[in-house]
Picture 1: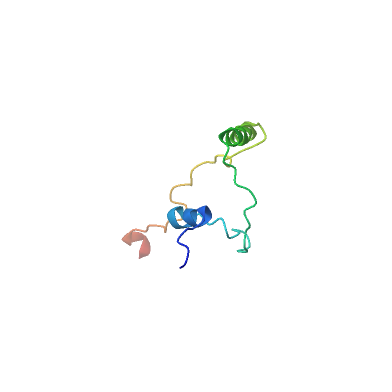
Picture 2 (picture 1 turned 90 degrees about the vertical axis):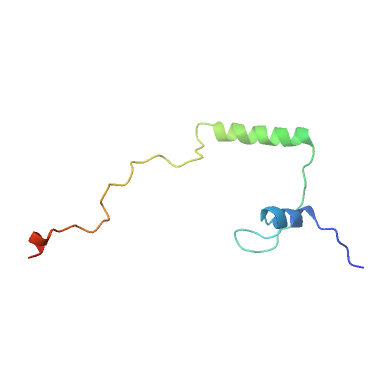
Length: 84
């Protein structure tokens, strides 16, 4: 009789379309080497990432820029007088 149990990685892929078993860069197989479940360790990792993201040298978003110029890529409009 085949086993009906699936791994948590397979559940994530099925429910949320998160594929932990395939490398997003090369498409090769990925091996999960650890699963962190201790809430204290998770909080410490997330606090570190928050501190790193808040540091002055780190930008999460690109620099802002001016909006595109209106009409820059539109076809010119000519009146009937200009076409004759």
